[in-house]
Structures are given as C-alpha cells and as structure tokens.
Image 1 (cartoon, rainbow, N blue to C red):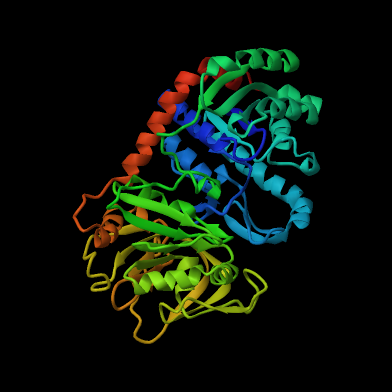
Image 2: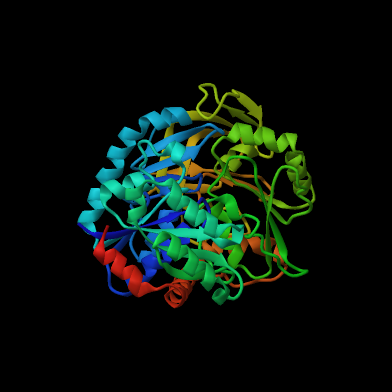
Length: 500
C-alpha cells in the first residue's frame, strides 16, 4: 500500500486544492511517485482524460503538478449540479444518472464501492497518495455513509491535516469547532493544522497557535500567505472576481457572460497570461458594457441559462455588442445559445422543453441523453476564418449532451477528430463575416496561436503568442518553492510516513 495523507478543510474554498497541488510538486521534485486523489468532488469544472472519462479539474491540476497524466481513478465520484437540489452523478468518468440530493444520500453505499475500487488501483501504482477532502468534516448532517471526508479517512486509515482559511475570519473557532463536532476517533486522525490565505505579520498569530495547540493537542504545520503572484488554475467559479485582470487604456476587453450553471470556466484562464488584455466576468444584474470579444461559456443547463441571460438583459447586450463590431464566441453550451432554437423534448437538462437562442447563427440544438466525452483535435476549415489561416492542429476536449444542426448555407468552423477514432467530422459554426463563431471544443483558447490571432483582431498590433503551458509550469514551480518556505515539510513527511 502507498503512504498517504488527507488534506481536509474547515469549509469549502479554504485552499485544500492548492495545498495538495503544491505538495504534489514538492514530493515529485524529491523523487517520490506521488498522485492526487479526491474521493468525491462537486464541481461544474471538469476535464476529459485520454481514455474519454470525465473528472474534476482540480485533480487534473494536481496531476500536472505531480508530473503525471490525469486519470479518472484520481476522482472516482464527480457530482455536477444541474439544479439547486440535483446533480448529474458520474462514477469513474461515466454518467450514472441524475439524482436529487436525498437520492444521492441513499446512493452513497454504491458510490463508496467506486471510491475504494479506484483507491486500491492508485495504491498499486504510486508511493504516496495525497488525498483531498470536500467541504468540511464537521458537516454532521451528511456524516452517515460519508466517503468525502472522515468516513473515507477512517476506513482507509489515512492521517489528516486540517486547513483553515483565516481570510474569512473566525479561523481558530473553525478549527476548534471542527474538532469538537467530529467523533473522537476522527479527531485522533488529525495530526496538525495549516492556516491559509494570511495577510500580514505571521508572528502575531503565535499566541493563538499556542492556545489552540494547548486545547487540541495538535501542532500548527505552517502559515500560508495570500498567493497574489502565483498562477494556479482554480477548481470552481468561486474566484471569478479575483480573476478579473485589468489591462491598460489600450487593452482588449474580453467579457465572459456568466449565468447560473456556467461550466468549465477555466476555458478562459489563458487570457490571464496575455499582456494588454482585460478579462471580465459579467453576471446577471451587471451591465455587459462595451467589449471587444464577448464569450458565452459552457453550461450544465443551457436552456435555463439562456432564459436567465434574456431576462437579465444580457442577451440583448450581446447582440448590441455584435452590431457595434465585437467578436462573439460560444463554447459548448454557449455555442448552442448562438443558434436560433434550443430543444430539450426529453427533459435531459431540465423542465423547459424549448427556448429561442440568440439567433446569431442559423442552427438548432436538440439535447440528447448520450453524453460525448472525448479528447479531440481539430483544424480550422479552409477559408472559415480569414484572420487565422492554416496554423495546424488545435487540441482540446468535448463534454456535451446535444446535437447541433446548421441551417443551409451556414459554414462549420472546424474539422474535428476524436482521438483514437481516426474519423474527421465538421464541428461548430462561423458567420459569414467571421465575427460569430461557436464550437464544442473546450480548451480552444489554450492553443496559443488561436488565442493570439483572435486578440489580434482588436489589438491593432501584432503580439507574439504567450505560452500558456509555460505559465502553468511556472506557477507549479513557484508554489512549491513558496510552500517549502512556509510549511514544516519535515513534519508533514513524518506524518505521511507514520500513517494513521
């Protein structure tokens, strides 16, 4: 069996994913065969592996940090919310069904079998596994059948490090309160604390550290500051405000229109690496204003999000921007919204059977039960985009449950091939003026030449393509170097070696 440690948190968004990513890179640098593992994840931000399986984006980032290919065993259970009380349940990368929250609670026994099957497989392949919890172990209403936090840690006999977010306030109460609410045998698994997102003089925390250690018997393993200048892709959309990058007066403004069920927001991270680009996320209730490039992202409930954008007036602002000369781009669900009509006769995504789209492209989308999940490659069709030309292969991936049919005379954007299939087919659509384009290919902006060429339409000058891959690698290196400074890595390695 591999050695392991589990990073749990006092709540959601305390920084568990980032800590695991940094530890993955540190151990990898030290010559350890290390892998990430999150038993159960809830997120709309997902990725498709080389095997065509769907998994949470956070474990993809952690695998990249560890220098290994992402595999679905690193995230065996993925929950993708479709409504406020329901989610699509994905087991080992494949859709099982849609369930309401109460139904999933009863389903946990089957989910547990999937979790431990993947856990066993990872144990056979790696020396150390860094496990990430979900939410908080003190969510006692969800404790029965738990596979996300202490239920997993107890059964797998994994030691735990508890992370608290000091930026939210009340971090010491959160740490002590967590210890008080969990069972005694669970508290014994916790071997130490990490404070995250601190701003200021860390020496001022020492009196509190001594008091909390005296009360709980658990040591503090380090204080992690606010990571302003280290780029690591986030797990979900909680950080969209922090991601708003502001360029100079002559910058290109890229505006992403956000509705309730936006998925795969990391499609737009590459714009953060571009000089002279302002990236904004615009929600219902906010004004879109004037943008150079407007992007409509993927959605887990396309019709519902389309209606939301229309009711909020954002659909009208998108059309106004197009008339003013902006380029409009739709990715996956956003591509479907560019069309004239959206149909969901079988209730695949929700309860509304049809809706009018933006009408920027003559196309009709019908939602289907079969989900396409594939890593794919594509080329821009000859003559489709005069501003792009022949620049070779675009890499990305597909996740969608709909089929889009183009009207007569509408040109497809790409020739696309699902890796391993050998067959090319048409994908997406582009308007005659080249200023409206849509595609099912997630990750298209990760391709530096494509992103740079799109921006060049509005920059007014040629700018060399920035390597997004290099920016990610720089982030992992800087994160590892920083965590080595602020964490007691010797103590953490002792915890991993000693076990539960």
